[in-house]
Image 1 (cartoon, rainbow, N blue to C red):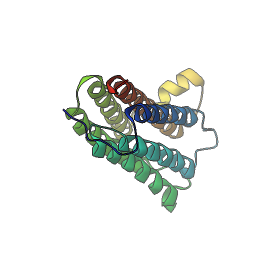
Image 2: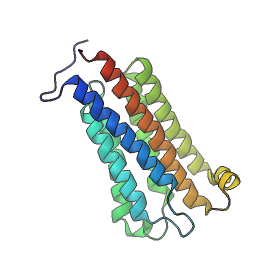
Image 3: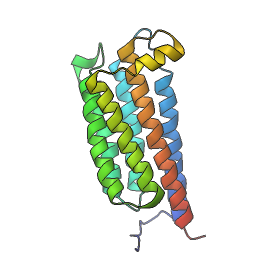
Length: 192
């Protein structure tokens, strides 16, 4: 299948930019894990992390050959979820679980559709990313606490706050790894 040419970007540059985006999102996951949870995490911080990840994903999605629109939509949904946290005054004192669940479910649907339209290892990573987002949403909906694992590994932490930090981190890591795989595939198919 012939790829549509995107003016101004060689396949090598495109692959490098997507790789940088993947690394940046993985670094954001480290930032989410390292959030100081003992005093609570402000909605502004959660929002900023989601907006940054969404914008990075939006740019990386615009560089994709396959499923460009869906990849950009996943980034837009992430940025929108972050914006809701920043501008919604009801979530400034304690993060609301509803926007996070909605973000995870919508991303899951977008990524599942995108996975069905790709092939090879990228399809696998997209399905893993969609599956991770669905699993995290189900955990939040059912009230099962990721914090149980965190407390057993790292000691007492406010359960819901720890859950948010680890939900963001888990989703970001899988998404970053997905982008690294996309970059690898772009690199392999680029003319040398």
